[in-house]
Length: 211
Image 1 (spheres, rainbow, N blue to C red):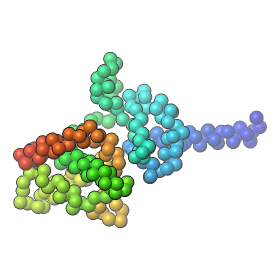
Image 2 (spheres, one colour):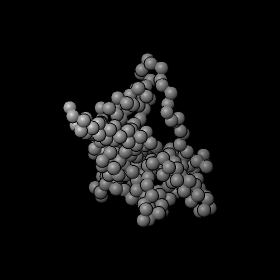
Image 3 (cartoon, helix red, strand yellow):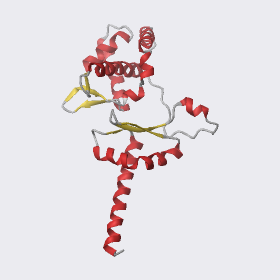
Image 4 (cartoon, helix red, strand yellow):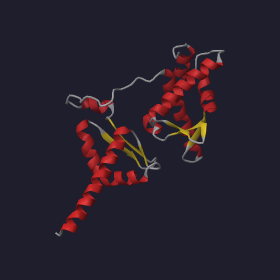
């Protein structure tokens, strides 16, 4: 092989290496969305086996939903981990307990997404801050102080945004897109018991425990 040919192969390998590294970094940081980066999404299709092999020694698995257009890495369900006789590996990120307000907001937004999908209204669910306040109000502790209620909901809203389940619109700060990854976090089985869960939320919130 001539020197120019060897250089050409080296360039190809170097390009593949950089694309693979960029893909891994994106997955370490969070969720990869097809609509946000189609080039990386194509790279994921090319490097799927390598990605799985890379994360497997860390106890992580690749979750990829082609229909919804997202991918991420996660630990296996707790039931699967418990069935293994091997000592569990340390977690890269510690599990976090969600507050009442955040948990409630995620549940209500997931219900809204299910209704949106059933109605066939499109693929992007956009909700206003006002809508979020109204759907949460019946489950919050009773109060005549509207400012206090708004502060609690805004605190939960900011946390849900930080967790990556909603995205504030650039041209309208009072509106948010509910991201499809929420369907992976709140699955269909959980949603099937939603009415009973809402009653539990309502009782918890009305008792003042959600303060």
